[in-house]
Length: 483
Image (cartoon, rainbow, N blue to C red; front, side):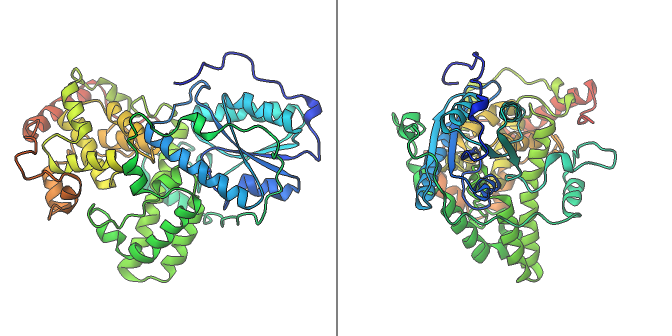
């Protein structure tokens, strides 16, 4: 973690700063867009000048510092958003430090009358937001939060007994049985800037991009970042790939997935925009193509489910959701095996292809993510938290919900998890989903030659060892999720 911890009391917000006609602050976080941004819409509709601010907070207690690939994406996204904001007459301010302190200082500098933001769902983030809201309200300043990142708020979807859902199918049925998600808000036509003379950090001073060495060439080649790019990618997916999604989404060489996950993670596009655009496209489809559209929306639902789980289990990245898995007898960490997995040199073609795609592009096909995760946990017997941390550092779409949720799903320790005894055989998976080795050859050019490494483990032996370890979990305690 960079910087010193925030140990001093936050800067007080003077009551004198509160003015009914004072400018509005839009505090941006994981919502780096102008369209369908409820906080920005509220600020513009308030009718006073507006300042948009992004606060890089890596020092507040409980905040998880970003991984390297995510930091690269954030730099590009802020650059794009600053240009888009300027085109509408506004300005994006950049500040760094404990968010509660930074927002208090900005309100004082500006004489702001209102602060608006879209909600976050991690425990530390919610605590910060609650603190800021209380301080602003006590000072007579309007402070409102909005739903901008999820289709359904976590506290609104409950079982008949009033508890959170732990199984996806009834969760999603509950979500989709009520009114549909709201329509997206339009982007403002202009922004009356309030922050023209206020100091702003230089984005380069944040050192978000790698320099020595610069390992991001593959990311630059793979991605175009920003709100416009997100909308263009969605439109291309809906026009070209959506009808094939249901039948070909598990084939990594076919490239029919939406590639929306990093744009969603950074809020360059909202789930509401994706939902309604897909729903419009679905109306023009029939048969298997229409089913593909429904299947895609269900995948958006899995993202919702992950955030709902995070809301109720804030230590999702570090603690087994199913307490019974605390008894799993992880052996001492095999550093050589972990390194081989990280570098894509395990001797198993689909695993290696996925890990090299991840390092080069900051992403990995979802089917291959499951295979690589299963191999680490159940063939190498390495704790899922090691894999989660590696993905956190190397994925451009690493978010605090989906990343640990996915790892716990594969491990069998999470919500609605795959049974632990389900072990993805990477060779069978390659034969089924990459039968002509197209994906493998795209990422492992030396596969099939003497330069390719021998397998580092025996799949049968390691599968039996994993199942024997799981028997100890079953003997210690039923592996059931908390109520």
